[in-house]
Image (cartoon, rainbow, N blue to C red; front, side, top):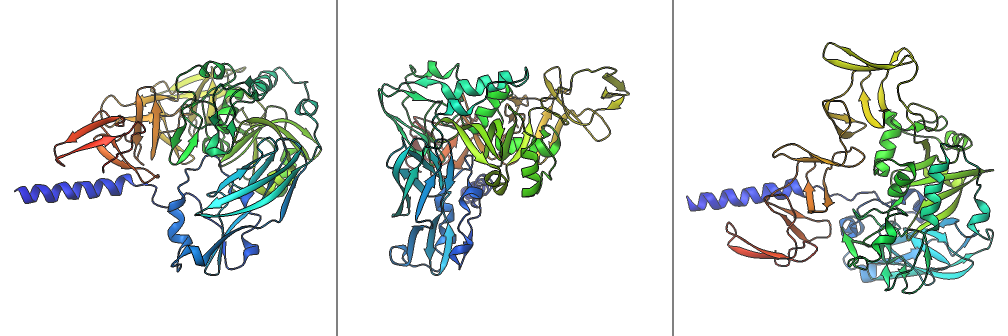
Length: 517
């Protein structure tokens, strides 16, 4: 009987690991070829602020047929030098890993550093001009490194001279909010490490723009100043191997704050365009947009619109010729940036607006002749004499209507994302679903948490691929460490736990990592 119990215990542990290790495959595919020219000029398309990077996931691919990387592999930057037009402009360079006759573009998983972050910021092969001058940018990967000299010209004297000030009543609150987050000044009293070490905010120096961060502590221009006095403000937050400031916001948080909507992410924005929740600006195929259609659509953008691809989103300030002036949250902080039509289209940025169903900032309130209609046990919403379909925001609440106009309730998968709609039809947001196990959680944009950790005031919780909250289970992180969630689902941290079934006491540090697995 004891042997049988032990076998069952081991089998259960193996089964648990197979279920929980849902991120075994790399999140993106690195360009690979026997010809180096095939993998250059790819960094821009690969640029992704939101992906969960673990470079070790790529070692089996990079090391195929390689016995010793010290002698059989090399790292280089494809470009010899780089020139940036001015402050707020960008260019891209490519980090190339060569091994056994194979070339890989490793720009998104390598570490980038600038020796003068007052001139240029470097991240995933993107070089952002911060000030006029020259800097040396170095890329590091697996013990090897390569460098490139970057010159930033003075095409733009100041961001203020590039930003127009005439907005409609619908645009003004959006642009005022974005401008306030970009122009917010703050001064740390201690050194603060920026996103993935991209920049160090020096003690006693005044900075402009909210710092970039992907922690649960997303802040805007109103709340961020108050965080400087918090005890953990200078504590570096770590998640999946990525380090960042404890407080700030990321590109999606920045746009969400400006639009005055619940926190979204780039995947949610893209799914929203495809489902009709957000209105496309112009005409293009949201599943496979052509460069020509995107460029034509950019000409129709207005202040307060946005452009998105999976991994990054940018807020539009104005269209000037074939350039777009933007408010953008970038590593290391929020800035005013400029992008050309060619650059944006080649990277697949899709223009869209906050409204739904077409038209900038459309509101689906009860218009003339519209309203709620119940037929049997099903609710419909009519507008202009027709049943509403797709996403509609009514009275500040999001609803979803099927192709026949029927209001959705309960769980519904839309554009590959699961949402939960209450019995009233209102989309659930930023809340737990379920009165007992299994528990689920939906983010502020309504999307169900899946295959991820979610940080809350009470602690961190993990949700499986099917959305169910994990409890009394071991979770292997992408950083290689083991974590444990208790019977309540909360991650164990800064504690020791004796587990009778393993006859062992496990110790966990403040970040939840098991110190003696």
